Length: 464
Ligand code: UD1
Ligand code: CA
Image 1 (spheres, rainbow, N blue to C red):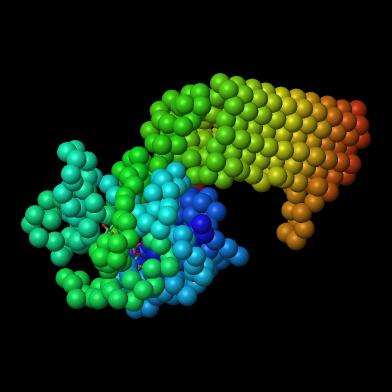
Image 2: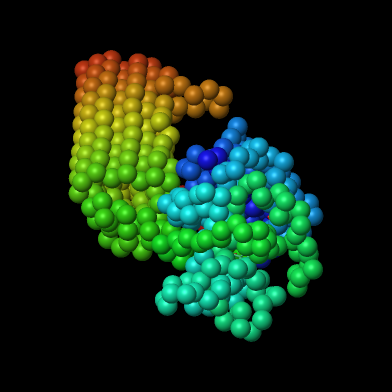
């Protein structure tokens, strides 16, 4: 059986009040339609076709990939018309082949639910993902015949859109989520016979259900395990609601894995967070991209970590910002530390408050506890970098390197003008500006001698 997937993403999303096409708005750091594409890919389909609309070039640009086909729908005459645009791009169908229709603005459907729907359609059936809602206003209703068996649902006869439904039909709680798996061979014929004589003057994809029934094609349904899997985004309000649902789900998984979250409602994961044993995360932390935390790690409140690896036993204290950095075992970072791209810390390193490290390796046991900038540097082991130390790595044109040998002691407020080398075990006097190599094991100091002016008097203040 071959499976093709059509993702409808031509809707304008006026209610988002944004220049960005609706399906490109991010949820957990990833566009809505990207969530849908990722779920689609996990089903190993033959073809994926994304239907985009007027002003949707950005959608195409954002998704361009060898396994994704695009079709433009202009004007937008309804969901049936949208799927019609995909038909020429579908695999030449065999009798059991299916086309799965997904919505680009319904981001949280689990792959398991989609698999269950595809399984339900096996053998040439049409399968609809349905859900029972306490308030079904606005949705297409699933109209079923009477069931012979009490308590079981009757056979599906058709779908009626809310605007076309009678009072009795509007009382139906079972709704069309919009997601359906359709026998590909029959699809083109059914779409070709759609009419737009209905309340909205649109070509409804949902009208193919009655056609299938009339032709004796079995119509069946599957239900997702949670209602949120079927929720769509039409406004910023709904986007924010889905973000919270998604974050709650991620937090739940982390808790089940044994991570301690001081408040599961106050963590945001926008990517993949993997954590070892005995990891504690305090409130207000944001994780982006791939973050890997080893065992026995503490992340204090209000930290930001993007594409970071932290090894076992390290503490990251409050308000630290770590971006594209690697932190070794048993380090102490922060509070208020900033690790920028290319910061690589060996074990037992201390990076304290208002210390910024960029594109630098810091050897085991080295410390920069307060107020320093370390950029484009190779720092050896057990180096002590005093408060206020700056590596002057940039001359306005080029970046240059600072090399600091093992055991060096850099006094407070030293200015190391790169390219420059500080030898192993060297001492740099506080306040020095170092422009030449400082030899190993010696004290180098560039301060002017302190003088006191004996006969100095303060100037008389002007009277006003
Ligand atoms: C549709 C279903 C309805 C279902 C509901 C679930 C139809 C006729 N109705 O209604 O049964 O309960 O979804 O949310 O199918 N789109 C296009 N091109 C178009 C029209 C829509 O690409 O011409 C896309 C939209 O961007 C959206 C999806 O299709 O992703 C659904 O469109 P929408 O207008 O929201 O459909 P509803 O009227 O809500
Ligand atoms: Ca909708």
